[in-house]
Structures are given as structure tokens and as C-alpha cells.
Length: 165
Image (cartoon, rainbow, N blue to C red):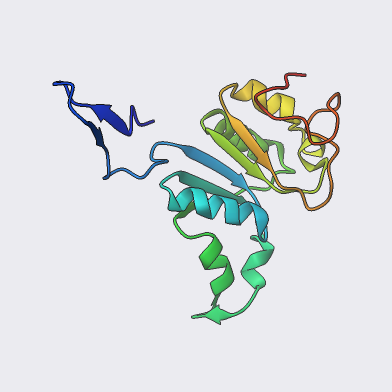
């Protein structure tokens, strides 16, 4: 991670701003997003300099099939996934879920927009994700309403920093 974007001069003069490095340089984001909400969030973070790793199923994100198409590929998909790294993982296979766990251990941020309960069904409840990487932050934008990230939290009150079930 960057040490500081702003630093004071040694003579006590005005602060100097680092205008060469993007604000999120050194931040690694793991994106398990699909179609719009997750990929859009990842796109914004990549635009600000974060290293975004998009995880797709073996058949690819559904957005790859959305038009318009330019040179045989979806312009929509290319727009939302610009400046991202990509990996294809079948999260129903234990060996590939182990690869995802390794990526989670080394990532600063997790973005996911699965249906509620999907991560739990895959064997990755939010509590395990926090245990893999206690300093990580997570963002969920589910396809349908969720009652809270943790089973003991009231709706819309849980955040990865406040709750430790």
C-alpha cells in the first residue's frame, strides 16, 4: 500500500501532494460480481488505481452475451471490466474454491453480488472470509434483499468492521 498521498516537507513548508500515483494504488480487490452492480463497483475502483481481479465461472459472466457487439465481443462487458485482471474458477469444485480462499487471504476488498446465501452454500460464510483475512473489507450488492450479513444482526446494520459473529 502507499505510505501517504500527502506529506509535509522536511522544512515545515506546505504539504506536497503525490499526483503521480492513483489514489487506490496498492489496493487489491477481488470481484465476484456479475452483470452490473458488482462489475460497476469494481470498474470504479480499477479506474482509481486498484488492482481488481474478476472471478468468473468457466462459462464467463452473463454480461459477455449482452450487446452491442464490437469485433465479436460485448462492448457492455468490455466497458464494465476494463483494467481488470481475470480468472475463471468453478467455485463448486473444492480445488478451485481453495484457489479463491488463497486470493481472499491476499486481497484488501471483496465485492460480491450473488443472491443471498450463495457464498454460504459454496462454503464461504462471511465469518470465514473475515477469518481468512481480518483486515479485509467486503461489499455486497445482492440481486435480492438480504436481512443482514450476519445471522445475529438486524437488517441493514451489519458491516464487516463492526460485527464479529
